[in-house]
Length: 311
Image (cartoon, one colour):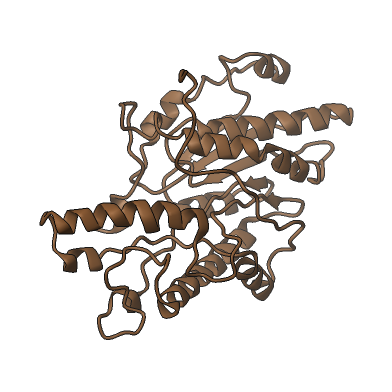
């Protein structure tokens, strides 16, 4: 079975579900709203709006975070149109993720479409002001968008995983073989460079696909895991999570005899936190996009979020 057919965040609404365990993601998303709004202010308004304004979240998962971000974008753009004395366009949202994603739970969280004026929808917490569609594969989203030549698109892709663990990292004959580790944090330079090469190849393909979909006046607000250190073996916050806590857990399993060391060595986490230079190299080489702003934003620990009911 292909990984994308079974890999997803925990669905449903139970105690262990993504819905109830995505507070850290929500906190980080809210901490970047000023950057998102700043970018939205640079989007050219179309008057009169002869076509829909579409928001697409590529990697929406199944919680309320994606719905919140779509609401922020649509409300901000609506206010911009109204401030300019223009009627706002019709809004649509494409929620895209792997086929294994729990779209049923996501759509249960969506408030019903208002079917009333934009002002009434924005003033009500019980209705939404846009049409919504679930798209379980990027290739289908790509085809769908290209069948709609008059759509203006706004993307919020949040790539975290590389497409695969590089083959050389799992090859015992390779200098990049990551023996004893499940992540590249603290690994050899050869291992880290193999991950970097895979990340840059994946990002280049991602940009090529998005450039075919983006219409004139569209923009992309891209958020991804990153690092401040130039050394790829130091993965920053990702290193703390995957290179320390996960690593310790796997080592405990080996020491307790629950799994073999060989099984641990055959498992590597397909995540790469790029530096600004890693990212910039790919964007400039691809040439499909112009970077308006590129920066590292410190969003805090990915592990600890204060519970609202905590004393």
